[in-house]
Image 1 (cartoon, helix red, strand yellow):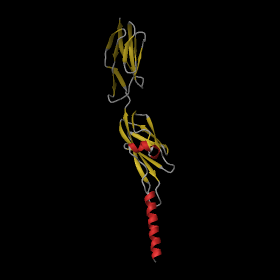
Image 2 (cartoon, helix red, strand yellow):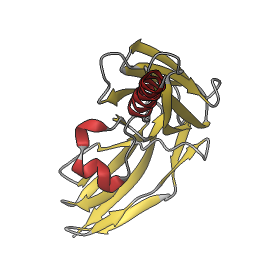
Image 3 (cartoon, rainbow, N blue to C red):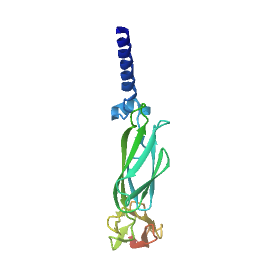
Length: 210
């Protein structure tokens, strides 16, 4: 009888040990632990992004194991919609201005009677509208050769983060870089232009004297 009881206790202890062993949560480490064990944690290739409406962002779930599964959702589908190319690749499509949090649930198979262990990874995506029109804040520029001035552009809608493309009509008179810095090159008159994605342009008259 004692032997039978001992065997039963041994079986219970073995089962309990296996439960503890296999029920240990997957590795979602702190920043320090990530440095020490980079291959044992799940990560997203992108955790924050600023995009324009109509653009897409691709996110990779890194360090997935063979049997892991991924589920993804958006806090607001009207701002950013999500789709999965495969288990580790997520495409986020910006639809309207605003901010949305993408939540990626990584599920790891557990031992026998236990449900899948899971943890959440997140990515914040801010969506800005494209500009529909623009204008220079300055009315005209009067400059001397070799001097520089920075010009500024206002876009509509005001909340658009679109940066215009700058160019000069005559680089022998003045040139401009993509930060809006105009450099007077030689005596004469010209125009500096700013263009947005829809083809709309604004122009600024530049007069250069010696």
